[in-house]
Length: 581
Image (cartoon, rainbow, N blue to C red; front, side, top):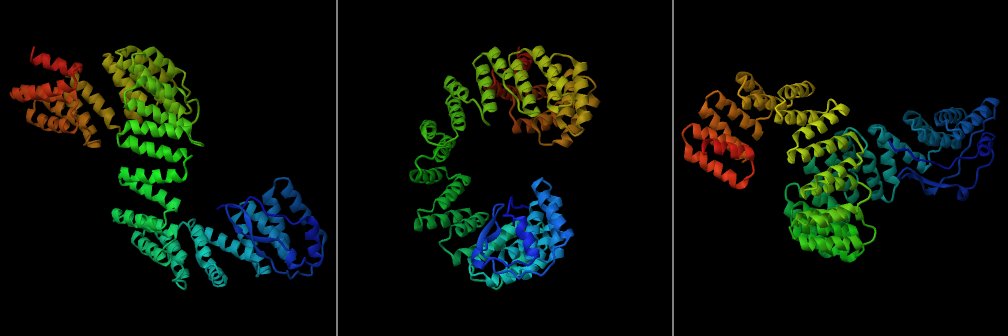
């Protein structure tokens, strides 16, 4: 639970005087205090005059006072809390009980704190703070039934019942048993059917309890009782959206026509439109918000992102630049998206310029990756690798990613041996990293290092026994080399059982049946694989089986269609030349 960070401590001399039954301050001099709010004790009403006990100050009590204060001053909150609780129980002085409650609360000792607040409330029954803090502790600890009479009494005496129900919802949110919390609040709220906040709290609690229909009903009741209440209309719209999204949009639209100045509702409405992919309408709402807050970089950024989503790149550029010129925006994020925009426009130099302007923050790492990617795309492999080498990884995942990207650049450049070196160097630091093992194995296979390939893949299978792609890689590797076909079929079948919808694995199944001479079964899998992913290697396999089966026209049709899309694919070109020299 959340404990307050501090409370005003009573001076030691005052506490000592209390035990000697010195006169209490007049009520108008007493401090005002309220229940915790965001970790603080706040003021609400003057505490009434205290009925102080007539207790003699003993040496033992003096020792406990000193022990408690010194422990508190020296950072021993548990010892201070226990000392003051013992004193409160001995002296029966409400001010000592208040101090004990404060210390146990600050020491995060729930059971002792509950005991202290119960004692304080018993000794000072008229204290609003003692009662409200006791209720807060009981509800936070899930002790609903024990809290009920206190809550009923507080609600009956509270003129602003709406505020109390809002506070109750906040406390009930911490109760682990959501269904019990809902039942409890339903009973507590029964006497107040005309309090909109009671229905709002019930709706929120019903959501957490998994009762969406009840939540919608209570949210609507809240809105009927307070039709101008922002929180009520947003909650009702949120729940209406689950089954009738357009009705929710209409509800918010009507509310904003009557209350165009409600900024939070308009923002909620704009986001809902965006969720439902009503991009043009969402952009209009964000634009209206921007008119109210013309210096908001965040709103200008949101508008630009919508334009980018709609493919209106020039407009998005203008809006991003407007956001960049605004006050208080996240300029690194804006520059990053300007870089993304220029990539979408295939203006690589401009994209690089914006990525390079990012010098820190959350966007720095990804910007460095984009710089390296664009350098590689422009044929600057050495510069791209240097960028990767100079990029700082904040964790192991980023370090592995840098290794993978470096190896990918080398593979794309045809430098397979160098790429394997990079991956193996990565494995020295992360010997059991699955993706590094997998990529290193594939790279070894490309270099015909079959022994290394099998060792790496088998290590991966040992680490991840349900890795479908590892089984598929080993089985397919044997199928390509046309060796150990029955064992290869077993491996591929295991991969297929683990990932039956994976196009690459379905292709391997088709190729395995081809190796076994079962052409009809092979075509069944290859056609299915090609329908899922018209990859050129799958097209090469499908065309070859069709050709061997005698369906040569169909084979050529598959090859030519794939060749038009992938004219540089070596495997596809080799298969076509094999049958059509």
